[in-house]
View (cartoon, rainbow, N blue to C red):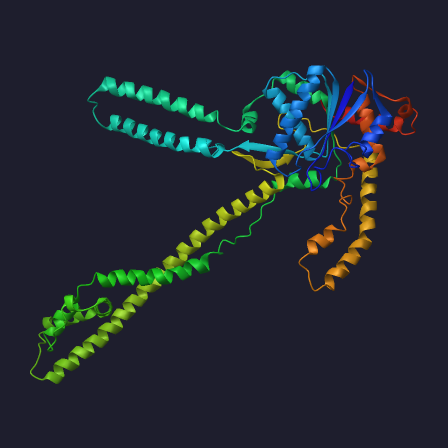
Length: 519
């Protein structure tokens, strides 16, 4: 008996039942063709489907890989020949399953071939801090560990900076503390998700070489998903201008200036303003204890603005000008002095406010530049995360490659003639959609309710307009895959296939592809 397991990719509705007419479902076009074109040399040929949730999520793909690994173990235990076929992110599911086999040191003697079709392999990098790689409960333990580590470092610093009263005890504490902290740290590392442990594991060179020899990567040069995801890493959007926060931060300078003025006003000694005036006129200010908060604020503000009057009265005394017998002269001089002082004080604080405003503007510009850089980085990281489905705890998806991270083999693109056939299928589907889109656009233009535009347009899309979703709709591509599988131990081409007019053509394509793929 020989088994072929098909794994679908990402998409709404991709996680349907095992039976249906999709390429990966039983009774689908691939299943029907394989039944007619290849057979098992050791019994029946079985076609299976691995159904997973189809989300654009590394976590979902890893969980599906666990599911596939369990099925692989069953096939290995029974000694059945088997091939794996994965389209799009379904190929990533295959990779995760094979990584698990490597990590758990499981030999894959019965695996004959694993085929990926239009698969962008997501490059994952572990986050640096252990804290970011832990779940909620281990994180709580990490807080205690961090606190103890800080206390331990503080103790070490105190030992270095002071003479040790109990050197033997201190040494024992230093050694035992280091041992305990190291044990706790490595204990916390064991709570990392299994997915992250795979990233740190290295399969043996023999295992990697064996997998590479059994891998058949198939991809179209114009595959939209592969090309688009490979370029995601290079996208650098800057939605936040360096000056985006300047207006808001500059506006904040107004209340800050008012707060500064209020603080300075409350620190002013009213007698500094009132005592010189009392020498010239009959002036008896209300005691501080008899005035409320508003009066105190107004009086302190006046003292602050008219502060030059103190120095002007000192200057009058220095030049020998003293209060005279004429009250009108004394009052006039005091009024004139206060007016001049308020003008000078206001001008002085105006200059100070200009300086502070300039400083606030410069500070606002610097803060805005820093914030724009941070927000732009986070924005691009979020775009990459959403595009690549990088939701795994403690890991970041950074790019999409044409091959798994453990091998440098990327394979060769499909033969030009076969690529053109897939392109033709996509173009025909796109041409059929043009008339539908025209009708959809007229409905959108003349409709009063446009909230459902997305759903309306989606009703006219079949997704067969894309090359990425059309591999299996090309008849010769299915024959090409059948031929590739038939070249493995335990599988063979049927007589019907050998007599097919396309048999020699796909055989030539396969030989050319194998020769062009470095091993």
